[in-house]
Length: 114
Ligand SMILES: [Zn+2]
Image (cartoon, rainbow, N blue to C red; front, side, top):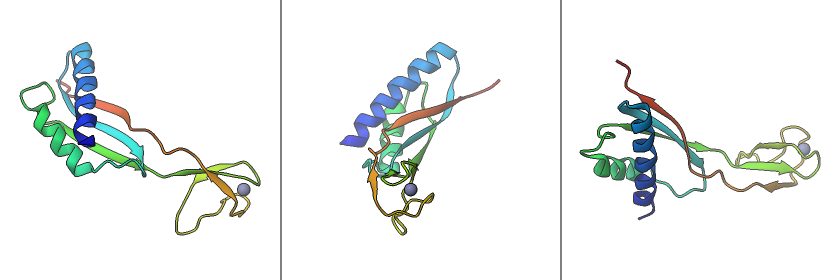
């Protein structure tokens, strides 16, 4: 399952960082594009399962879905595409290219402070 692979790579990255900081991670923020087929609940569940008995046990994951970006063919501005009103916010043109969906990124890790 896709989410399990994502959870494993997150766990590896967070564990590495925790070892470097010599601290216990309490939460992490992840972002990904809207088209990235990540189910937050499945991901959190998968993460919880593999984090058991590791330094990451009990951590909270927050997943932020980023809007799709478009680039206007008329004025070349990039903007967040709203599917209910797909047009350039700068010049109003409806001619634009969709930019590639945002990759899954580990944004921040919060560590326990003593
Ligand atoms: Zn425009």
